[in-house]
Image (cartoon, rainbow, N blue to C red; front, side, top):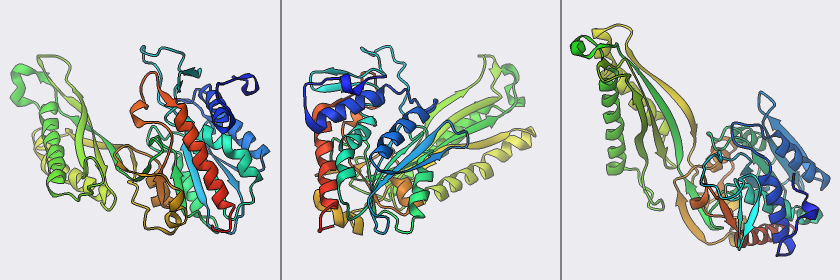
Length: 400
C-alpha cells in the first residue's frame, strides 16, 4: 500500500489531497472479477472517522459490497455523489508503467481507474473533511458501488436503499468521466446471447441436417432490420451523437470444420435505448417473432433443434433531469452542458429504481477509459474538488 503521509506531489491543497487519495485507491486491484471489500472497508473507515453514517450493502457472497456514507440531516431531501469502485482488466502489453501503481508524468496521473472512475472517488475523499465540518442544511450521500463495469450489478441495492428512506434524495451526481461537463442523458443497454442448436453431419449430406449458422444468420438479419427501423423511425433525441436507439450483433461463433455442417452457433447482440422507450417490450417482441417464425422450420425438420435466448445484463437509460426540483435547486452550481452520452452509467438505475433524477459530472475523458496507460489530468481533479467544495458551501447556506 502507498503511505499517503509520505507521498509528495508538486501541487498543494485539495488537488494534492485528491492525487494522494487517487494513488492509494489505484493500488487496490478491484477488477470486476475480484473482490472490492478491502477498498470498501478502507473507505468506510475513512468516512466513518469523519462522522459519516456508514451503511455497507454486501452482495450474496460477501466478497463485494456497496458503501453509503451519509452526512447532514435526515429529514430533508438531499443529494447523492456516486461512483463505482470496480475497474476493467489491465492485461494489455502496451502499459508503460505498473497499472496498479499510480505514476505522475507532467500534468497527468496514470493508473488503472484513474479516469474511470476512482478519480471522482478521490476528489470526494479530498473534500470529505470540509463536508464533515460543515453544518449542512440538506444531506449529502456518498455512494460507491461494485461491478458497474459488468452490468451495474451493485447500484440497484444503493438506489433501492436510498429510495426507501423517509426523505429520499432529490438528485444524484454520477462521477463518470465527462471532462467536468454536465451530461443530462445516457442510453440504456440490454445485452443478449442467442444459442442456436442444429444437427451436424458430413457437409456432403447438408440437406439432411439443420445448419445452425444458416439459421443464426436469419436471426442476425432480424436484429439488423430492427436496428434499421430505429434509425428510420426513431424515437429520436437530437442531444445524442447517435440520436436514436441502436441494435446490432457484436459477436458470432460456430462450426468446427470445413466439411461439417455446424450444429451450434452462438451470437451476442445488444439494444442501446434512449429514455422514453420500452426497451424490454421491444426486445420481447423481437425474440417472440424469431421464436415464432424461424424456429418452427428447424424443429419440423429435426426435433430438438431450436434457439435459446439468454440475457447477459441490462441497465436502464438515464432521462433528462433538467426539469426536476433537485436540478433546479443545484442547477446554478452545475458546469456547462456537454450533451448526452451513449456509454453506460448508473444514472438510469438511480432514476428507475430509486426514483432519484440523475446527471453525470466527473473528472477525466471517456476517451481514456478502458485503455492501457489510462490517465486523468491533474487539472481535472482540481476542477472537480472545487466543484464539490462549492456544493458543500451551497448546501451549508441559507439558500438551499
